[in-house]
Length: 381
Image (cartoon, rainbow, N blue to C red; front, side, top):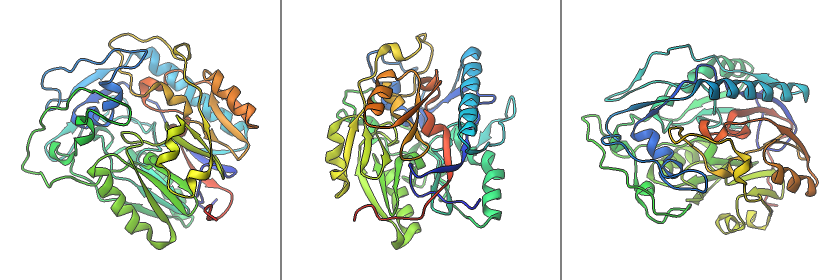
């Protein structure tokens, strides 16, 4: 089928599901720590603040993941694939990251790649166009290459295929103002990012923006902006899309991604972390109904050791995937959220996903919907 996806709720026909094969470690460097700053260096009810190791910003540190977590993650991802196929959705998969993959190198940096798991991050589907976004984490710089076979399939069927300018990603490419701000959206204080190192390849702040920072609402696209990198990326996206779309900037709803803060379940209905999010929305979307996700329980998550990196907030189960306006895939551990959505009239399908906090994503993150029924619509009328 031809690529066609304008929102997150129209009847789903085709989707890409990420791969967790050979996910063995996290590469801790400035780009990684900046991206996950809120959840690495800020306390929540389950985990203490992570202590920073000396020189971490200037020297990468490979943080091993326990093999049993990876095996269980693979089981859960394949379970998601089966659920989607049983619902009649055609599922595409990325190429697998080879075992012991060689490190990738940029101008002045080197990093070990990760598999194409959270594939929502580095790609944005807008109608019949694939847009490869500008990556923010060095270890994920070539991640979309593992999706090339799928993208080429849609391109050969008539889809457009574009790529944002690729950043150089030196230390000084990153605007660290959000990480250094003591009054961020999630509340401070957080630990400061140390001074980054200069490089002969510095060009100043660069455009960096993830697809998961964008909420597609037909002709309107909401984009979360937390720093100058995001603003530059949004400038490019706005110019690239042209007058057919209206790009709305939302400032600091989160540190980067919007889909564990706000998702659209159907026209006129959002699922949100808290009711104050309504104040950040552009008109007329501030008139849409907001279903506030229940407070997560500590019992919803596995217990981890101090050496396990926790990359998401406890609200990660808000990261649901809609099959259509009535049916939603929800983590089976989020019992209170399931009950809430059922009371709101949704058909909820529970799916197992145990280690979402260790691997940085839920069902919305792991997937990229490529074909949904319908055409572009204006939901502001």
